[in-house]
Length: 122
Image (cartoon, rainbow, N blue to C red; front, side, top):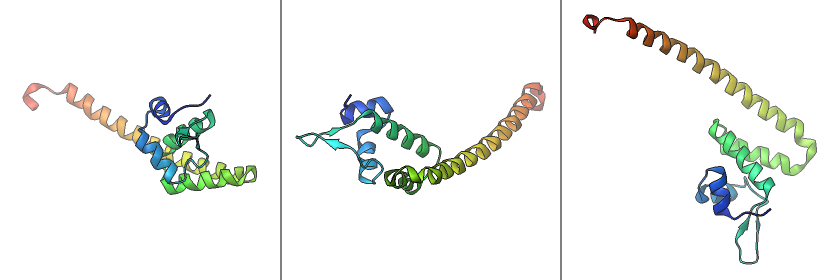
């Protein structure tokens, strides 16, 4: 099934401007255009957009995402490299999650302390 940029933007929760920017940056190199020059997205394109969005939301740079796209365009022989990049990113996220979880526990303890205070101590 084919989708217009507006439908894709709505579906993935990004603006059409962002989708055009991703294309301009080389993150979406395979987007086809019809005879009128209108972008036509396929399901595979939407998968990539959702992956790009995920990586971007989790702090990966456009340059690193671009590198993954370049590697994937080179073919299946680059899968080990792509997996290595994604595994490294995942480890960073897991470390960040541990820091956040420790911080949440510390904040919870402070809130519990506040809940136990009398009005005179405020």
